[in-house]
Image 1 (cartoon, rainbow, N blue to C red):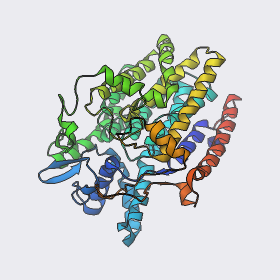
Image 2: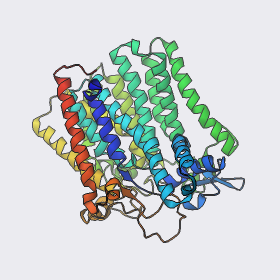
Image 3: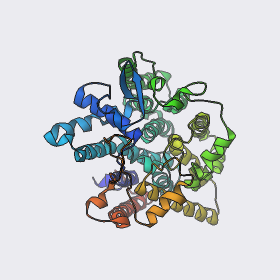
Image 4: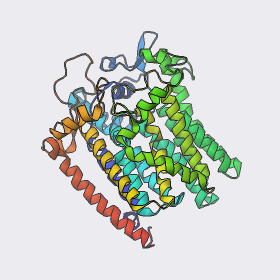
Length: 483
């Protein structure tokens, strides 16, 4: 236990999990479609969501039945949690209060937990592979965890963040083994890495892009090559679940739910909503206030010089190429979507998968000798990003699509007025109703606090965890044993 307390990654994990679990965002089309599948399997032993579909527009229709049009991974991951609470609470399970509590626990289990694990993995990656100083690695890790869209999407029952988390965990396993010694490429670790890569695809279909890049990286560096069979076993097991779901729900292992979606964007373009990329869209995705990645997380701009420094280092070039490839592939994919804006949101949600990889590139600047003024500017930018992400997470990450200035016209005014957790759609409420009662909440509100004071317990928790992190970092930098 003492050794665990001296590990910075343990403090980062607990801090991230506690912060992510602090917020309940209630319902919306995306999360409702996933939760409907959970309920259908547990309550009715079926994959059809006919009994619940009125609460979402994200659905697929086949042979007169309705299904979730999402990849099933988040729903399947949430099954054990929902089955447990559903069995435990008897008659109360049909109430709105039960459904809210159950969906909150499912979100913590299926989304916040793997996201927090990825936060810890990012720190381990940075101190092991590019060998960035522990304190600097922790700073970049905190900027990722709370100064990017990873924060709000770790509180939503979406697939972006857990898919990103699993893919990065797999990359970390292989990369750390490469830099620490091939003896760490044991069967268990490689099978787990493969299962994580396959699981990412089960959660979010575009994660196949990351999986392909990480698999190519493993193919080059895992020695002897026969050990790759363990990765294949892990990935194959996960993908077998996905293909089985497709076969049962859509009559073919390779039949995607998008092909049956009632959403028109999935039927436009050359293939399931894909068209030729647009430079104008790239501007919106990167810099514009509407959906710009660097508008909400300006500190990530240092990923550009950081990538240059990493690519120049022969020892780190392979890892840098992985991170650059993932970022470019997802950026290209998002620029090809007819609905590139991602519907309701506070940023480019389809780029969430790139964020841990972009953070690795950003940390590459630590390999150079940046001036103090540059470091100060980067730290200030990260703090601004953390504030913006906190405001968005506390108010409502799913900003209506019609809001052209999500932060300045919607989130920041609401935050300054103390209007937090403003979502009025529940996890099981039919769409089209007039929603007036707030359904979202945070743990401070459950304690009886109001407005911005509901964030005080979160602040106190964060201070305690940061004190733990500081002590752990001092222990590491004094070369004391870490257990």
